[in-house]
Length: 285
Image 1 (cartoon, helix red, strand yellow):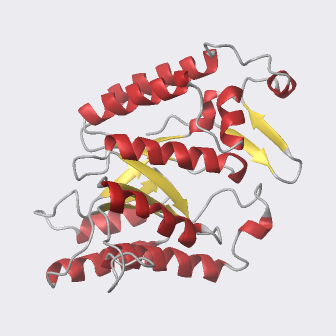
Image 2 (image 1 turned 180 degrees about the vertical axis):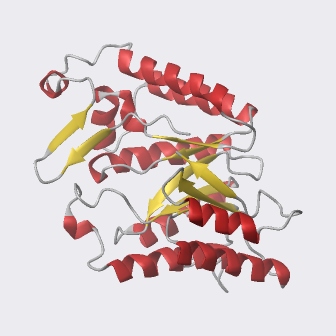
C-alpha cells in the first residue's frame, strides 16, 4: 500500500511534472499561501490510508506529492514549511501508534537533497526506541550512495537513534542526469550487494571496523525484484544468525503483483517460528 502522488523532474527538459498544478503558477509563487491546500490534501489522504493497513505493515510515501511550495524547498535542499513539518509529525505519530512503518521514497535528484534531509529529521525524532519507524531510501544505482550512507551513519552513531535503511537499485534512470548513475548494471549490482553485506556485518566504511566508529542501530529493508539478490541477502543474514554473529533486522519488499515469485520464495524459506522483524516478505504497493 502506498499514497503515491508525486512530482517528477526531467533533467533532459529541465521541467517538473506534477498532477493538478500549473507549473507557471508555481514558478510565479501563486501557490505559496500560508496554508497550502496541496499539503492539506496530501496530509488528509495519507492519514486516511492508515485505515487500510494492519500492524506490521509498511507505507511508502512520496513527499513531492505535497505540491510546489514543498518541492521548491526540496530543490533548494531546505526543510519545508511548518505546515508540512506538522503534517509529517501527525502522520508519523499516528502510524507509529498503529505499528505501521513509513518508507520515505527516494525521488528525482532535483528534489532528493531536501527529501533526504527531511527523512533524517523524521528518523531523528521517531526512531528513538531502538527500532526504525521511519526509513530513508538509498538508491544503489547512484555513484554517490555509498558515500552518502557512510556520512549518514554518523548522526545515529553519535545521537543514539536508529537508521531506517531502505535499499533499492533505483527507478528514475530515464529522467535523471545520466552522469550520476553507474555506467554499467554490474556496478549497480555490486553497490547494492556491498551495502547490504556491510549492513549485515555491521561494517560500513569507518563504522564498525577496528579502530573506527561504533556501528549505530540500523534496521534494513531490502526492496528488490531481483531474486538472486534477495535470496543471497536472506542466506547471509541466516548464516550470521546461526553462527551467533552480530547483524541487523531485515525485511524484504516487492511491489504487489510485479514479483510475487520472489515474495513466495522468501515465504517458503521462512520457518513457522521465524521472527517477522528479522526476515519477512512484504508486498509494497
